[in-house]
Image 1 (cartoon, helix red, strand yellow):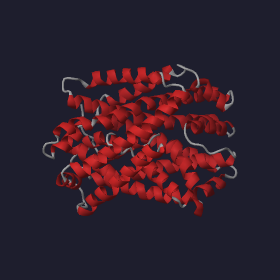
Image 2 (cartoon, rainbow, N blue to C red):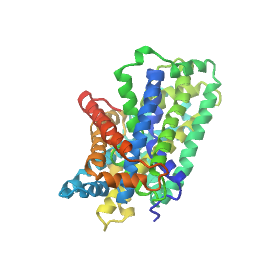
Image 3 (cartoon, helix red, strand yellow):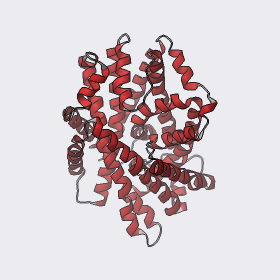
Image 4 (cartoon, rainbow, N blue to C red):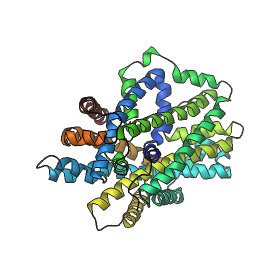
Length: 435
């Protein structure tokens, strides 16, 4: 099995595939319209900080440890004497977060597969969009076949390790961007689409407040999948010849671009049809189908839409499954990758089947995103900049880097990135904010 990405393009597209997901598609546009230009400016600012320091640090730790989540934390704590016991167990917190989010994400992808198939058959337009969505989102076991397909597709694209992940993302990520650009061009031809663009880039002094800033910060942080787990395995597959910081920054740029492109599809379309702008599943399964039903060639564009989102969903799931499998097989050497993937797929499916209805799925995902994921992200940030030896981290970041990073980069991580991660975790835990 290939344990290394073959090129920088493979690194970036695989990282982007891990990062781009539902947060970009149904979260970013909703928050962008609400906060306008203020949100966008602060989002770009925070995305720049998090990709430059946070993402780069996770890549670096993964490449140093040459393993998944559990081995990376053990490696970091071993660099400090007498802390190996804690290092062996603390990595389970972010890893469990990845496992739990994977369960919920499989349900999301099953919904999307249902939307894609119904777009192909035309069933999506035979009834009111809300009734269509409720026909499977409110009924138990109605998407069980799609649920199984989502898991099987994910496992297939993971079996070859770095090689199959890289190859699949070289197809899925360009397809995602190209299809969304086509959709954006179509939306631009609709009457009064310019109203939506004005809403996107408007400056409203009322939006210049702490709520917009925190929303932008949370969206940037979790959109990049800096969860103290997911990007470590990407780093483990990065060649020693690659510039980690450069790859991290490019990942941040493409991830931001994906959210903006999605906004160019969703916000103007919602404005044209004077529909309520909402985020979450209702946007993808009620609002957009209603819009597509009322435009020329809407069925074709529905097919494009759901296929593009399938690419984003599978690529994110791919990372989650790979993180878990790599961590388990690295810690327990007697287990094979194939057997771990098989067991993981079965467990995720069995647990996920009980969450297939939106009434079960929604609260479950809120609990994971409010409590588990932010805690794991903070543990990771603290570990890389307060536990791992400074020289080890800086040396790895500077390996093959054209521009050497030292005191300023490290201080940004220690005194800006880590406090911001802790602030976001605290806000989530105290105020029950789901980013």
